[in-house]
Length: 480
Image 1 (cartoon, rainbow, N blue to C red):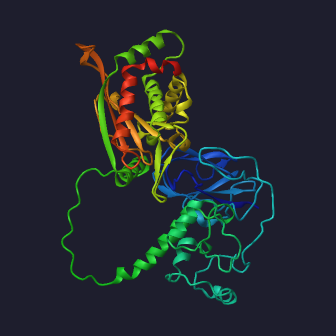
Image 2: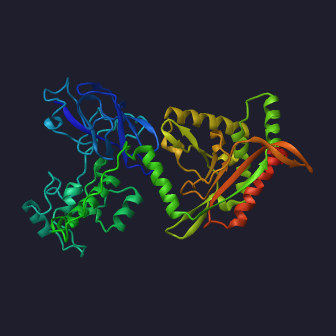
Image 3: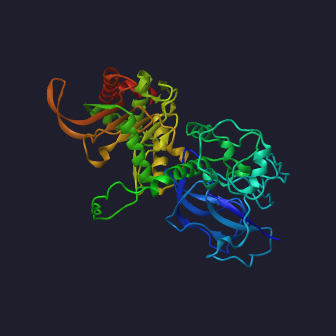
C-alpha cells in the first residue's frame, strides 16, 4: 500500500527563511524519481531548483507560481511504495490522502536530507524511531487546554514560573507543545535558540517541522506570531475612542511588490544606513600608467588581464596595510573584529537586479586568477545561477560604477562590511604631469567607510595608497 509523504520547503541556510515559487517542474500525477528537481524557487540570494527526496507519484502541489512560502511550508505530497497513483489524487483536494512527514516514516524511496540546489546522498538506512517524549503526548496534536492534556499536566511536576500566555496561543502557531518532555530540545541552530531566548519563548512548547522533529527558525517565528496575535486580540475588539478621519486616497500608479531580491536589497541597504555611521572621501587619480601596464601585460601573450583584477590586487595590498577596513563590528559584544582574509565582493548588474558576488581569498590570488573568477561569477550572475555561497562572506566590496558612464558616487556600505571602494569612468582630462599641462586618463576613486572602525586618517591613507598604485603601478608588478 502506498504511503503519501509530505515534502516541505527545506531550510535554505545563510539566514534565508522564505522563497518564491518561480516555476513548477512537475504536475499532479507525474512520476518523480529520487532527487529529481520538482520546483524552481527564487530566494533573496539566488534562483535554484529544489530536488525532492522521495520517489513516487505527485499527489498534490501547494502554492501557485509567484507565491512566497516560508521554510517548512509544504511544497508537495508524493505517494511512494505503491504500483501507481492513488485513486484519490486530485488537484483541487490535496488533503484527500493522509500525509506523512519524513520524521514519521522511513521509506526505501527516500534519499535523506535535502539542500536547496543540490542532490542528496543515497537512501537512508532503515532504523527504529525512538520516542523520547511521553507516548500519550506523541499522538495526534490537541489544543493546549483540551481535556486530553489534563492528566499529563497533573502528573508532571510543577513548572517554573513563566510569563503569562494566552490559552492556546502556542498550539495555534506551533501545532502542539512538548508537554512532559524531559529530553533534550531538538534544536541545532544557535540562532534559533537565541531568537527564542530573546523573546521569552520556551522551546519545549514548540513542535519542530524538520526531520525527526527538528525545530527550525520558521517554527519559532510561527509560535511567536501566534503569541503576538493572542495578546493583541483584546485590543481589536475595544471600541474606538473617536471616529477616524477620512482615509487618505490610495496612491495611483503601478505597484511592484518589494520582495525577493529587490526586497532583500532594500532591507540590507536600510539596515546599513540605520546601523553604520558612514562617511565618504574621494580623490582624482591619473590612471594613464595603469592602463599602459595592463596593455603591456595583454600584449605579452597569455590570458587577458582585466582592469577590475588589477584594481582588486591594489585593494588587497591596501587592506594588508590598513586592516581596519577589512573588518566588521560585533554590535552585541561592542567589538571590532578584524578579519584574517580578504573576500572581495564586486557589484554586478543583472536582469534580476544588483547582486554582489564574492571572490574568496582574493588577497592570495594572482591577477590572472582574479580575472577568471570575476568572469565566472559575472556570467553566473547574468544567468541567475549564483549559489548562496557565491553571494555571502564578503569582507570588502569593489564597486566599478564607471561602466555606467558616471564619474563619482557615494556608495552605501555593504552591511556587515566596513568599507567599499568606488571606481568611476576613466576618461581623458587635462592634467598637470611633470610640471606641464597634458591630457591624461583620469579616474575618480571614492571610499565609503564605517566611522566606527577607523577615523578619517586611516580611510584617507588607504585611499591615497590606492591612488598612488593606480598612478604608479610598477611597484605592484612583482606580485601580479
